[in-house]
Length: 432
Image 1 (cartoon, rainbow, N blue to C red):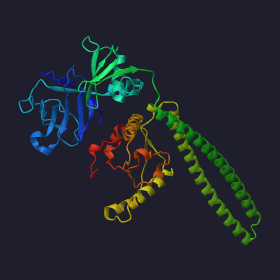
Image 2 (image 1 turned 90 degrees about the vertical axis):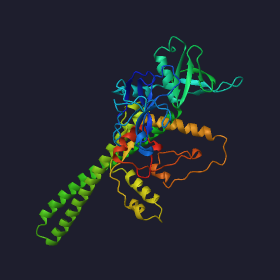
Image 3 (image 1 turned 30 degrees about the horizontal axis):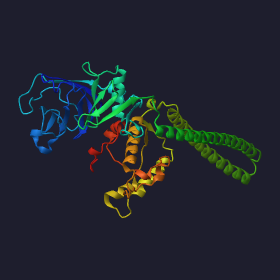
Image 4 (image 1 turned 180 degrees about the horizontal axis):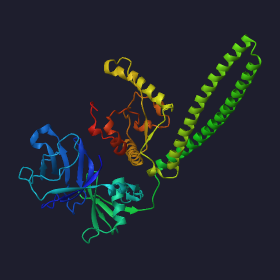
């Protein structure tokens, strides 16, 4: 699935405009109107499956998923694998006749991807009047919306000092002159400010850990190089000994017993040479893998994470293959049989390491939210996992917020989508 921007033209101005991908619903993307034209009405394009009958099956223009209020309906592009929004044939109103003026065109959403590259600069004043100033970082969505407006000249809409932004289903007014924001529903007002770009604390910690890991890999590489040189010297010595034995065999051609003994020694030496050559190739392959890993860590150290590939294939000689397989086998309870017993004979054919900086930042941000939500709470239930934390020794799990390792199965066609956009628990089901 490639995210695209939709452009809707229609005689009804409420639903005409630019739409971008917001989320997923019933297995297909949900599009949200990007410019509300100063209106408080939220406009979505979403898909509803046939759970409520064929009359409600299809694509809808509505303020929210499943709303009783709807402005248009289209019963085309219903196939499970068809993720595209119908470009024509829309009924306006939804139970009326087809409106030929409603047309939808698409465009690759390349500009939208750049919006997530804004640095974290914006903060809001969380403390009340009379309390010590407590400036907190704005959410990623609000930060990007404010930074985008700042780069456009920091002015309001329609010649005023005020414009609107949306985040997590809430609408906020922003006063450019007073540097303030308020929720249009609760009318709660806060001061805002724009400061210098701040490095993410967790990223700094990760960079320190990565630097230590790079140093460890460098030392390991040096040990491998020394071991390789020792093996090469030993191979050269064995070849020389083999040549000496051959000369000795020629000199003692008349002694049958001695010749047989030398032949056996020669064959043994040849086996040793083959074995050492194989070990040499394994060490060279391991060295190449560690060089690739060091290059991957270097991208973190030099803050060039966004230039790295999202998925990186691991070498089959890597010990992580055996470690993960053993963990999967041990995760299956001993008293489970039938389909469960198939995991005991699992074979791992390939491993990919996912390095998606944007998803990781969102995950770290959510972790901090959970940590703050749990502050002051006692007797928080403990969540356990059948997976041993030792399978990913580099992962530092936070027990205070019940951070654990989990297994999630999927089909081949969903791999790239999950690697790029992450898991959506609303789409999870036992059938995969």
